[in-house]
Length: 86
Image 1 (tube, helix red, strand yellow):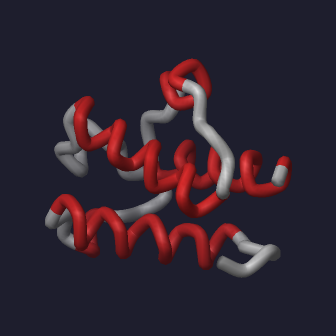
Image 2: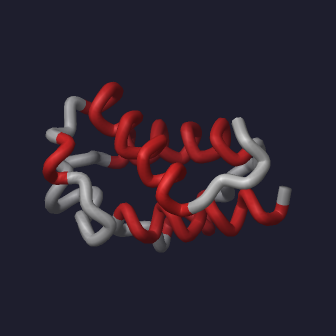
């Protein structure tokens, strides 16, 4: 993984993961897409996504940090913040 990961490449990485792991149609994956309401991710899927963010950033995501994540943009913001801490 590149040290300098911009928001666009992180979006692509997360979008690829959602398509592959959860069969989410790629055209539904937008920054404003709601993980539960629009992408139909349940709490188990959210945990898997949290683990994927940890793999991308190399940093542990606390449940408290992930609790406020509702949209793809929230995921990107969290992942970027964690990546910057690395």
